[in-house]
Length: 149
Image 1 (tube, rainbow, N blue to C red):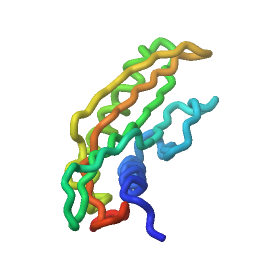
Image 2 (image 1 turned 90 degrees about the horizontal axis):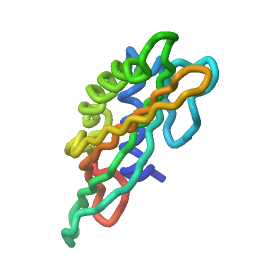
Image 3 (image 1 turned 60 degrees about the vertical axis):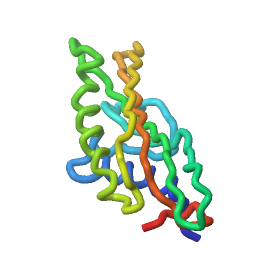
Image 4 (image 1 turned 90 degrees about the vertical axis):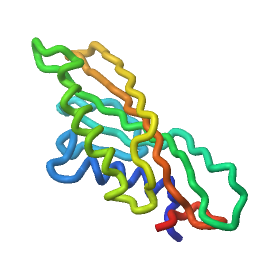
């Protein structure tokens, strides 16, 4: 059985972030929340948050607005501001995710209503986390949750 359009969207986001040169040194996970591990400088996590189907009642394809969250984590070096450790990673991830349709043909619009939230935590070193939430407009087949490609 094929995966749902929602799974296709998060897989496409992971692939976009892993395209060479990979964001977060290729340390990109999908659907596996876990804190930045010892010895890791950066990480990215892709998660679906919520999906809303259109209100149209037709026999045709259905459009969905799925909110995707990409959580980025970076460990600051000694003397570095935590926000600065994360900034380049955030800019790179955002630029790649705007091209999400290149990785999933069912995507109509890749970066609707973006929202960015920061969180800084102190541990042995400062770890900065940013959550980039955005809405992906994508289409599924009639009467199905399978992507319409």
